[in-house]
Length: 298
Image (tube, rainbow, N blue to C red):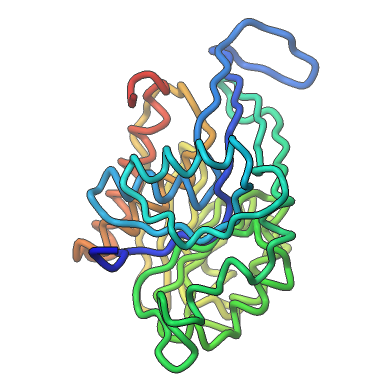
């Protein structure tokens, strides 16, 4: 490999199958729309956005040795990602299926069994010298998602392999939000969550991102970046607190918006932006993403 990666993206790398209808929907609806199959997963979505910012992300994940896995990694490499550290599993490549309406995500199912079963095998490059070791741990930025098991996330929160990393953690979905609890007190991680996820972690019904951020900091969080759809987003730590309102835009897709926000925030800070400017850049990146159809970005 000619160059060291700018960012490590650890977590789900899979195929997204997403159906989108341009109307408001609820459970039981059967309507016309568009269905697309695209590379996805939190780690992959973040890496794709980082590539658009001309950064070099490396994937640490588990992908099957099947044809779908070969195609997925081929697409990732073509987009500019480092794929040589991905663990190849004998299980089928993971998949995600979602239904969206103009009012947001209606339902989704994530099949991440290959990633979960691989366990800490996906972290081997961080221990064997290729990307770092316990004695000389990785020093750069890391995007980590909650599709890993509770045990693995707890291990990472305390691991010497991440002792010097700039760790950015996302839960992947509200159902996995509580998996981030070890990062409240065991590390200097930045938590990227939405308001629903923040409230699940804190077990408190905050009404705004500012209120939720204050509560999570009080619980021991080092830094939190919280979104709430079209409502203001907040970045807060013991040293700063900023809130930025997203611009009003039409919603043409939803899946991957939070990952795009997180990647936009990371890219801005890698480029040297201060926290308030980075938050504004992340809000703008997410707004552009949800207002474009998939064909607009191809």
